[in-house]
Image (tube, rainbow, N blue to C red; front, side, top):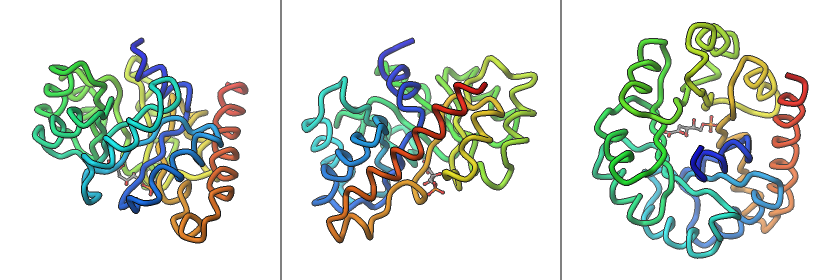
Length: 215
Ligand SMILES: O=C(O)C(=O)C[C@H](O)[C@H](O)COP(=O)(O)O
């Protein structure tokens, strides 16, 4: 397994930062890291995403934080953000050209999928894992049912995943989960309460670790 994938597995939770304020990015990333969330994606619809990626990759060592881009819908965005330091690329949907671009540059790619057909198509196209999105809508049973015949495809449910359902997704066979809203409280960051972000991250990673240990 390459280092980026190992980093995502080790983290167990990938934090999705959408619209993160530039002046709070590093403090938020540090707060997440303190809480054990060591894989972070900045979504491509965040203003100045390439600058933010440069900023965060320049602030943390490779062994401290794994950085990726989320909401990548086209290969141009994949390439631009990989050049800015992203190590993995996540999409809400399946784009074979994005997967191809990631493989061209040796980066990890994860298309968004909802059905077994999409999961297989993404994996055949060379994706490292698939993001089951939006996960809450279909729930852990859907992930478990897909993992039955498709056990070889690593799945990361994302979208509506929180401390209340993360363990169920891991129990269903997910290797990790992605989370934005339930993990990163921008209001807390705006108040300077980064400890609150660390606490949520700590709770989240503990839930995933416990679910893995039970499984
Ligand atoms: O477009 C992407 O690449 C995404 O990752 C979609 C969503 O931003 C995440 O699924 C986070 O969703 P919440 O945890 O419900 O906030």
